[in-house]
Image 1 (cartoon, rainbow, N blue to C red):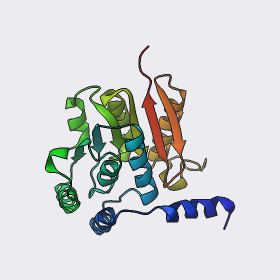
Image 2: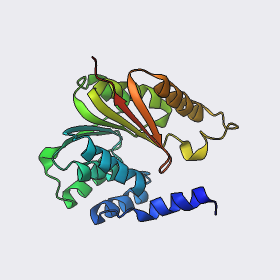
Image 3: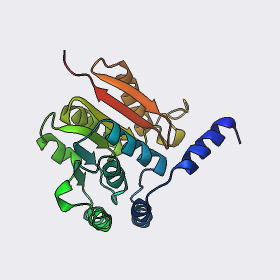
Length: 211
């Protein structure tokens, strides 16, 4: 095992996931909903707490794992979560109820993000998580940046695509889209961008407030 692999394994194994999130993770796997890793979830919770997020929007509910992590870090925040799969939303609702998350803290939207996001209010959210329809990731991140308030943060997990993005031989459309997203956000003066190598990669973007 290489030093890099040993470090990555240590990081993964050091995360203590709350029991209610572990239950949601198991259900997500049964549904094939592909939850974020516990290490990424812990980072989501940290960022929600560190930014003092009060309004959060999540593109891609899954079975509720990422949403529960976000509210773990910001328990007083309100979460708007979007998913096109009723079965996933039902599982997430059950997970949130089991975790005793007040119903007033969560707004559930059933629908395709491509149709829902253009109708959402601009600059209305402290934190935006984009984790749906990876083939449309660039469009969704564009919407996320529009929805984030000045100084708000947009988070995009899985941007290393299981290592394909780092492999120059890989040139499929999805890998190319992630590389384009990473390059454009690193070069953009409108955001401060950082790529964390946890999980399959977590792109972190904070919008630059106008002077």
